[in-house]
Length: 208
Image (cartoon, rainbow, N blue to C red):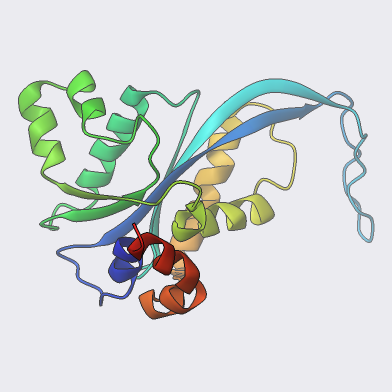
């Protein structure tokens, strides 16, 4: 926890950008009965019946100090999907010496995914682009990508998107608009806050 919080307290450094990554499974929901189009002064009329058209996965990387985010929609989340996304993320920061990557401890979120996807030379080079930092188990609230997903759900996924092509198009449009506005996050919870709030847990650890 303190390692993550310490990274959040650092000043912006384009050579070592702090990027938060997470992924979210999403349902593809379509209309069974076509909704009635809106008219002036009238809301959209939509039947409560809907059809489940499978699922997809949204991958999201968010740099909270610059307001930059990269999203990708996949049919599933495999080691290959993760590796390809990380390759694209590395290419998005060509001038950075090292990308400080904050993510959870999912079994696909490690360099082994690179070696299972690329040649050993490519995998090693990609590994060198990242400094991987993991949030503690059951502490996803420490990952600022969660804040972006909350915004995505409220602003984009608050309607039925029945197939992966439409879903991906809408998610990309949402990200493009957020990037245009350069929406950032000012993280307020510091190491000192953690030490005060979780004081009894610190004492428990020190007793071992």
